[in-house]
Length: 138
View 1 (cartoon, rainbow, N blue to C red):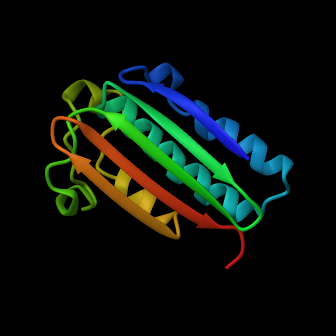
View 2 (cartoon, rainbow, N blue to C red; view 1 turned 180 degrees about the vertical axis):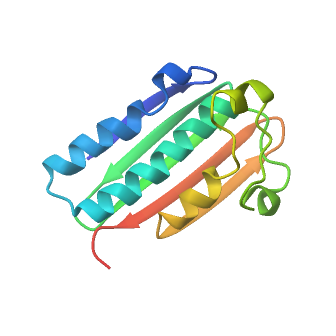
């Protein structure tokens, strides 16, 4: 099963739409609630990162009988130092984003913690691609 979601940068009112929709689908498929929670946390964090940092993005979710693959592509400023961005508490979020309660520097670490694999590639001035894989059985 393949799902695609367009994400609009700056539109916090719609942040979480993809995560909420995927959660419903996974529940309908009787996926283990622990797996659902991990997938939804990782996806939500990625979705909010696009909204907070990029101009726009696309999320593709591929669900099969063994695993869930999430690919988040955005058009934005990119990540100059991925290792630094992976540190808990590090954030480049604007003051406005922080005032809304986002941008605490937990997004990428939470994504890593809740996925079985995480790959990030980024080009400064162009955008970022995040690929997450979560297995249905360990």
